[in-house]
Image (cartoon, rainbow, N blue to C red; front, side):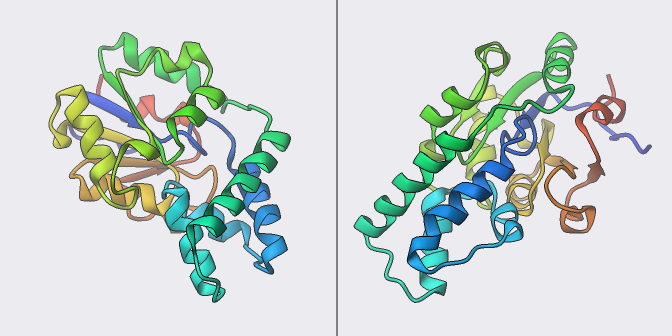
Length: 218
């Protein structure tokens, strides 16, 4: 398996679909919340837009279905979506995720977390012992522009005090990969949510987290 040419100073992770196996629950929540409005959303649509701010995703869905995205409509749908997600969500951490983070930390890498999920949602989803491993956390409600804009990853690099070129990003979705690459970072994609052909913009694609350490010069 091909290794990265240079050792990064920081490794920055997406959360949903990378560390936490939560994407099926996100799909169910969106599907059920949109159904009363006559909107049918596919699993692929939700997975492909993962990482984007919820407001942007929802506005796009409403406009495509000729529904005016007023603040009241947005808040009503999102509140229901959150209620459904909370009802169904069971926390499943991808195999080897904690071990990978702990190993990288031990090897001297700075760790960052960048996600479209709001900060209060991160604290509910991520175990405390995992959150403590990150030196930078950038939530969806802490940036003006969400993925695929580079702002979230650039903000993480700034907090970590490293250059974008010294960062390695671990992603699972096209918008996240675009965000990382436009920020000038190297990106490894994990095919946990989408087939490899949808992740081709990443520098490398792996099937699971256990393969990542093999790719990083230690």
